[in-house]
Image 1 (cartoon, rainbow, N blue to C red):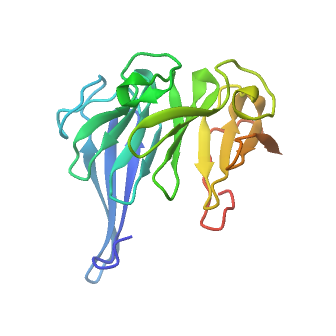
Image 2 (cartoon, rainbow, N blue to C red):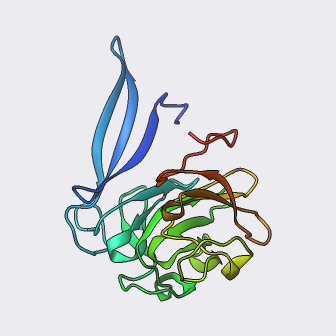
Length: 220
């Protein structure tokens, strides 16, 4: 929310057209709120970094925005996390288009169909790396680590690589640093503690793919 302009702005993914859209709600004299939709980045299905109108994505499933207005999106078919500046310039923040399961910095890291993404108050990203059955963390400078899961599917609580998931798709983080995971094929919501990253099951689900927490930490 921009209190000076008295308007709300949001970034949404358009997976069908492989682009990001900026939604702006502003007040027009005598007409109340007006929703304006414009293309933020992306033009077609491919894998190209660059300015808006040039950059392309494979497909898009998750998006978060940091305190500086940069957007981060999961690009599953390109096995990458992409960054978009407020000016619409797209770069690859982590991964490089080649599938794999490797921790490292920036494009040296590897993902396999990353889906959900969340951001904490310190700017760390959390990614549900679906086909690696793992939860990955990316620092603000792009260092990728695996905080839970080993790359093999299963259903086990434990610390770090001792834990296992089955195709996790959604992820959220609360103000206390607890990470919640939609462990889709295990039909559970899992919770990772801030210290030790030891998942436990907190809620049985049918098929849960996305998670949203409000400011009080409740699921929406």
